[in-house]
Image (cartoon, rainbow, N blue to C red; front, side, top):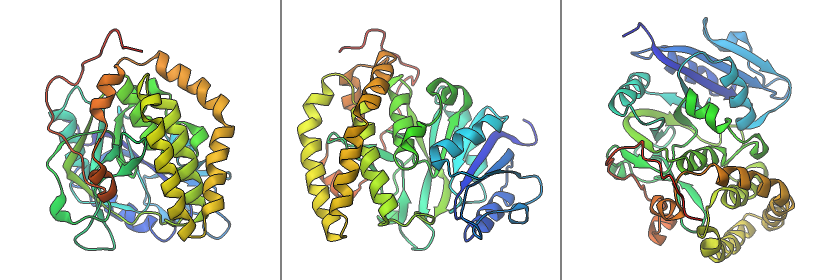
Length: 342
């Protein structure tokens, strides 16, 4: 075993001066060090930019004048990374001391798995979870499982639909095969899209219980901000239309439309009804581009719609309560279906 883990930690920072110091300190305190840490100053406004004084010696700081979003920013950092494993870490996420060691241990326990998630605790609310993986529901809605739920609900280690991008690990080979994040999404749901495309190739994702971070969440954008609402709504529809395979798309579309209508009523309570529907219609305006991407994704698919259906959550209560959906890891994760049904 080498002196450092074969892991590159990638941190995309935008208006992150309030949290970057704690993030860097947590990485410096790791019991097992990553090979490298790369930080992108992603075009923050003047006076809010991160400089060399904000990162420890040895951390590679890349400065970008234009905001590339989470997707483009991480793609840029990945090009400079030298490790076999890429770890995406939000600048408002503070890893526990053995986080890197637990990620490395997960690689050894699951040699055929290329996608891993971390347990996320609420950094500012003791006793609450921030997330234990992403769930994709049969309505076409994705959610961060366990968000603001009691720590007592923390599940055992196991398989999830995908990891939350705030603290996720993927093999370099799979990331390159997928072409990285979809930069057209810019920000929000790009981690769900990456995981969905991986799952369509027959890959599986494991949520590592002991690999943990404390996460603030929405530190740079605000949870109810117009930015978060717009990109969250626009990208949710885009990811659904792009990735839901075969007969599952027409079968679930009425439920997705009904869920969208109900969510718009919630947006009205926050005085964002018009913004919500602007995002929906902007997503529909991008439909030709989305359909071109869908054709490429579905042509490379290696699992059947029925297999994808088994990956989804079908629980209404689970969706409403943001319940975790971590399933026992069973069998050979390298399974690939040779003749997917249409």
